[in-house]
Image (cartoon, rainbow, N blue to C red):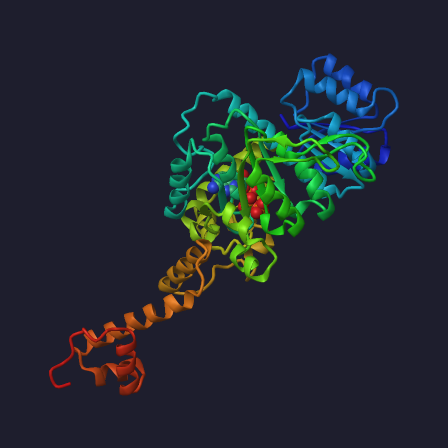
Length: 476
Ligand SMILES: Nc1ncnc2c1ncn2[C@@H]1O[C@H](COP(=O)(O)OP(=O)(O)OP(=O)(O)O)[C@@H](O)[C@H]1O
């Protein structure tokens, strides 16, 4: 059984485009040209896993239909398609229920991505509902990670459970920052309340403040109705500010004030609104550098940087790749309603050697691609998408110490350290000098030859690095 997606729009061309794209992506779309027809089908006992609807339609309009649907099926994820001018009223009237909105005109791929996310969300919330009493001291099962680098992340989640402290999550795009933020929320005392994610990079600059704090009717052109912002939605719960490094400086100033004072005004409003919100922020950028450049406020940085969690690149936890791949293949099969593919051991090994610049998200997308495109049930290396065979995706060359060095540097930068060459170069020289000296039984002249330095250089280095205590040969 495929994942049923209902498309409700009076515009024939939109129905046609979505029908094609969704079928191609493996969904089972059903299109309705009127809300009333969709409501009839619901009445008759049918139910999709995702509903996409236009707002303005003859007969019952989209928003009325959504309200009716939401009352009966609160778990059903809904995507509202609408022209920008209707966005406010759409969101306002579906407050708290809308899963996503899709401003028209939209990109078809974007629409398909949203549907996939909604379908997953739906499946997830059903699973969550089924295991509401699950113990909360363990990391959630859906975060896969046996690699030591991930165990550190789990430990942090465990240590922070029941706490409401502000957390800053660092890590490249697609490493699972949002997943970890969600886990932090689910393990906190706020888990019964909302987890509200907001991606700074995805909102137009001039809408960020109204998105965060809401606005009063008439606050600016296009503000046709009052709107509750994400801060209010997250009251008692957690606000996840993704890509915080992209937040414009004026919004940073307002955010800082809210964090200091615990209250704010809606845009155009005069009544102070008090909220109790836990902030989790994430970024793939180097915030210290942004502070230096003046693009990020230092005081805000210190407020956010209370606890920092670094999520390693996928290439730093290769041992997890086969398990992750299996997980994503099963999930994709579930979403698309097909039998799950398996990986031939050679394919597993091959995938574990790749560089994965897009991290876990890229692996997830690859598994979806394979679920649709691979012909046999077992996936062979030859079935992999062409870009997986290309040069860039091949593992970075380098011996194991170079890899360890890279990992060390990643971690140091992730922890906010600077001037890392100053730590690394002396350590590097010290190691080589010590080994060379022990090799020559402490004879400096011979050690200098082995190192490729002049005798005087070696003597100077030994002094600079404080290695004078090393045993040296009696003749020296
Ligand atoms: N350890 C993991 N186990 C299972 N699924 C994972 C893991 N890490 C990431 N994922 C999945 O990979 C996808 C990308 O993760 P997520 O959106 O959390 O990354 P992100 O770091 O927030 O990315 P971006 O910075 O681009 O927003 C999601 O679908 C997430 O569920």
